[in-house]
Image (tube, rainbow, N blue to C red; front, side, top):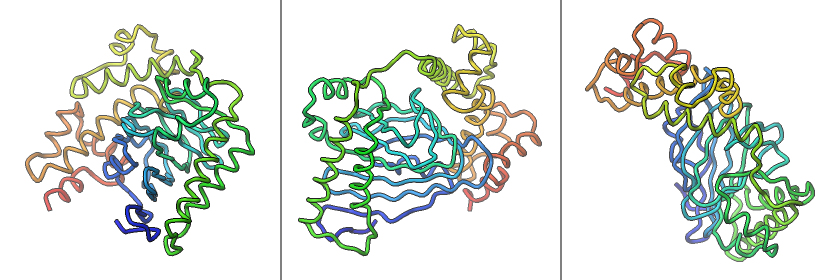
Length: 320
């Protein structure tokens, strides 16, 4: 961590690259998020952060599809803006670079990013939302029960990106207190203008996408609660009162993969987490069997495909 902008109380965290999802868990400002890598390959997540008073800005990019779930900052609103080509589904909302993802304090976020992906998240104090002049809009934003996407006027969204870019400058270019205050004020004004340009109040529509998200989220919770049990997809369908075909569609929409593959990835991540903190107190075989991997050679292949190394290497590094 290094002091940034030359202003006491404001900080700049230089760009960090992560190659392990466990290390990213608490890296996003004010959030507690759990990640699952959806496709094999060498993971490369870049994250750069800065804070100016009550404002936090995170800039990130990722090179592989992932899913995540967890709780956002319990004290502040979180707003996501996305780079060109970004494609994701968060809380049942299809996301692209024409939209802002708006989340109230402490809301749960769940979904997946399906392409090489870049984003900026603005974590802002409640007073920024309370000052919006449009009473109906302000009420809807502060009473949302889930994260939602809104599509601002393109020109105002462009102005917001420019206000972000004015703050996100190389760390070697110092800002004095007055300059930082002006730039934060400009960002606050640009964000207010972008939100106010939304034609209709953001309301959750019970679309097919939202219905898919709800059923997939319930199924995911069911699987997590029984992570060490032999849960079959037929059992999952019965518990969700849904057909196998509908559940397949729901998971494809919500998490970008099938329920059986998602369950296997969750279990592989659980094994990896246990091996990484084992300190020699367990074995690969014990952890694999505990999570239902009964064929050692197949398990080793799936593990290496997912994480780029064998489980014995993960365990050896922990012991060392």
